[in-house]
Image (cartoon, rainbow, N blue to C red; front, side, top):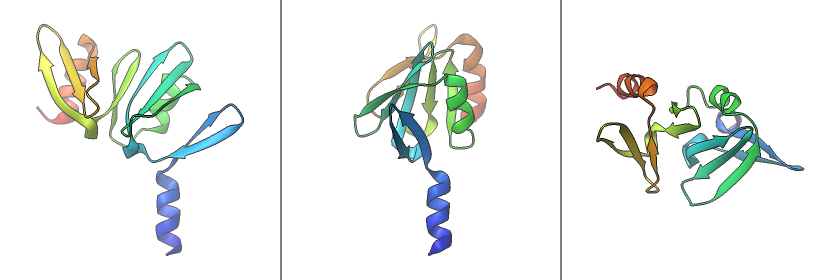
Length: 116
């Protein structure tokens, strides 16, 4: 029981928003978008939280949890990718309906990550 609880705690990611620390499981997150040092974390239940943190720091936190940086301002959870379109550029559509453009430099990495 203790081991199961510590494994669940290890999978939770802490995020500090103002005076409060929220802990979330990575699989609850569909994607993150950033503008400068303000990142918005989008959840599968439709909620979102804005955090003063760089995308690079989130990239490190979420490493090994199925997240991939697809653009200089976006990270997606590959488990929430519903489809990938290509009409001159790659666009991923997520389970929440959000469409995110994949940069040319990251398109190859996305294909390799997904194995096609």
